[in-house]
Length: 145
Image (cartoon, rainbow, N blue to C red; front, side):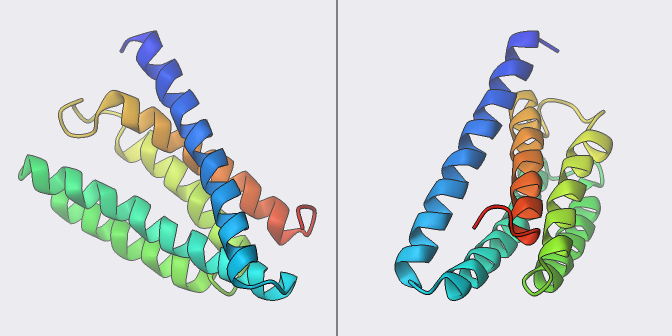
């Protein structure tokens, strides 16, 4: 694995996470000017994003069409969608879901070939997930209103 791929992937993930945080906060506040409503709408958006993050791996499995990955990725989709649904009402569960998705990147996809999950994407997803989880923990604790 090339160090430059890892570094660029991590930086891309952090950049995309920060952009997602800023745009989601802005749009939720614009759509729901009352702060409580905006916070709830933002949580719903991050819950949807969690399901989408798992869905991306379904796309990788469809592209590869083999090696038994579809079953693993479908299981992940079901699990992360369940966490997203519960997390839409319980912010700590939503943050946990994003943290667990980082673990999915590290543990489940650690040994897969680069043709299945591109090396840069693995690192970008990992850093995105960690930043998202940390942000959602801060929102759940009320430090980032």
